[in-house]
Image 1 (cartoon, rainbow, N blue to C red):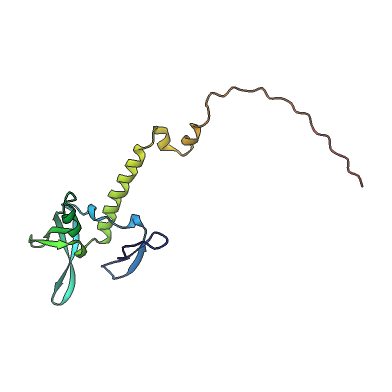
Image 2 (cartoon, rainbow, N blue to C red; image 1 turned 120 degrees about the vertical axis):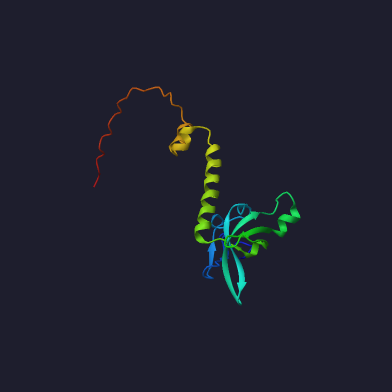
Length: 158
């Protein structure tokens, strides 16, 4: 993965499942802080001179209170097949497409809830038009329709 976005704000991400390199916007990238205890993901291991992905559960994530610990980003993981516990760096952790969708839904829904809390009225949450109606006064005095004189058609000169 490239750590700097391109001119459009997209990052190049290498997908472990098929090795494809795709450009993703920020919302398509899963923050490391979303990998918390209890989450399942995959880890890359070498067996018989071949790299394989195995399902693991995160037992302990690095503490965000300790900057050095967070920068090292060493996770304690448990193999779901044999219950062995080990340490793994964040570079070896992989999420498949289903796990990524679950993490993104959680993140996006949290952001939506925060944005909805910032809207003052419940009417404003339901429609876009509500924010424009607050600008204009709702107590408008009716005005009697008046007749305007019709313009006479002008005569054209040849």
